[in-house]
Length: 303
Image (cartoon, rainbow, N blue to C red; front, top):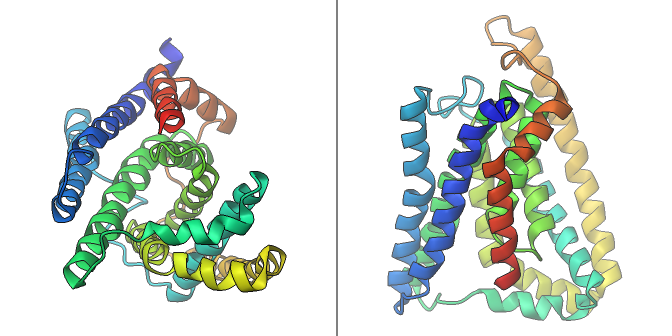
């Protein structure tokens, strides 16, 4: 059990957040008014993700964020951000379409996706949705998963830290159908913060993706799947995805070239790295981490 000692504290924090998320479902289910539901959701996001993380940092006597992942660093790479947004959105669309095709519901997927916009009857309803389901979740989830959790595993092994935080992020949504898309999004968001070394980067990307999914994606499915068909839609999405991915790779190369040529910039060391497989294995097999994944699986199956 001693070999899991260093991986237990972040796993306990993760399990605590998962339990709070499970309990929050009971509170939001009792809200009758739309405004009350949105306000409750915003408060719960802060209570669930921010407060346990701050308490964790206090008792562990550690800084809120890793030296390499900081709120102080502005994401000064607009082309990278725009292209990464395209990769996340297009990749998630393809994954969700693939899942729908796997279960034989691809043709009806666009119609069912269009029903996601609820409770937006006026401007105030739109404002509630923007803050409750787009902005606040982007800030709180990125602070926790890419700020706290990713940082906790990074000094053991950065690559393993990306995978551990990505799995935790995807599992936190308790949604088996959307799990592949959340895994992809989490992986890309972790990649973005690794490249830019700024927590503002995944926050901006996460917020933009949320806004797109809530306000544009349902209509986009309607105007593509129905008139164009599944195969032609996939062809277009793949083409656009490849273009965005090439831009991301080009911008990533340029960013790291700039890092190498700037003697004032701290190099991408992130502490003493251990074995990738050892960190990954011990991280996943830490008992609280396993308990969190089991809880996620149970809630996903009964949802």
